[in-house]
Length: 103
Image (cartoon, helix red, strand yellow):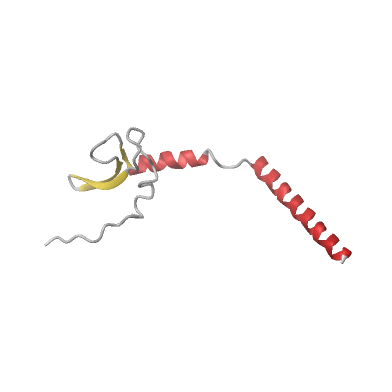
């Protein structure tokens, strides 16, 4: 007897499910395991009505990581950010000290 459990909205093995949208229909892709002979393969795919997306889990997640790497801040940007935050912090601390002296 085969029983099924409750539908799981979040599947840890498919982190990009629903996050990635199909370019053809605009809906979030789903994911599943496909069995071919004795091995199982993980795929992301669009819903049956569209079927425009059918890509392996490894390929799509690799492309996603590549895209994220494009958004990594440069060392120069991080240096400027640190300097700006420290300057604002010191300015604020000086302002607080001046307020205490006036009292």
